[in-house]
Length: 351
Ligand code: HEM
Image (cartoon, rainbow, N blue to C red; front, side):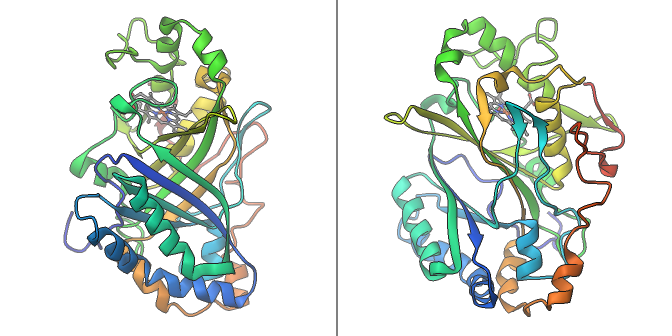
């Protein structure tokens, strides 16, 4: 990356064995907001404190803020493309936004490290926040996800991952990123009742070998087809780090989806293709066996900005209100699920 781009948080990491995903809401009032602002300056030091005790543990943490939380905590200036999660789809096939002001994505090779850092991070916040969702994810052997397929193969890597995830064109927010999370629960009985060939047509890859299905047989509604998008003839990628999670006694089998990108648009376009279909109706059959039960969009400041946010003045009430996105703005989703996002113009609807 060129020198002038500030250092990013640990977004494009090596694959880890464990992760904790925490979504929290901030309590109302001035004191909780002040406490969270101050905490922004301590996050990196806490990661160092815990990580140094296990040098080969690969401990990292990414912290992001939701749209309303940004306005309440920091006011103007705000990241240009940050907005509340836009619901897509309807009925059983719906990507829905759920409450969340702060996201913590903690990764390490051992769950004890993740757990220790999570408790050190949440401790000082006390009742300034409420954890509304906490998922402890594990890496299944062979890099397989809960539905038995190898996950992460087509992730961009190295400098390409940086190019697809780090903001370079929003002054003051360079080195930042956007992250979208969703917690999915799977109907494993239904999924396992399918033949392996039927599952492969849904995902678009061979289950055992992980080889992509030949274009001649890969359905246009396969998961990999619908999440392959192009803009001006170029493929637009995101960086994913999904994790399986579950509780056997409760019959819970899940995938925590997490995707990073330099703009929310490509991730939203993928959701549109999956939930509505490309063209509409040609939707992702993985969703017949997977239900999204949470959803959140967050801005991830660069490491430098995160630390300096601790010194931000509390926004005045007027600034915070002025910064609230206009709920009647034409970029809000229509009831047919269309996003009508200007920046998506030119993005091919068909690969
Ligand atoms: C139920 C949750 C999900 C599961 C189990 C799942 C699983 C998979 C698997 C097995 C692959 C093929 C291997 C790979 O390249 O990683 C894949 C690819 C991919 N998925 Fe998902 N995924 C899920 C949700 C999502 C969501 C919500 C998005 C985006 C909004 C997404 C975006 C992608 C992308 C971009 C690819 C690569 C496509 C390609 O270039 O071939 N996935 N996913």
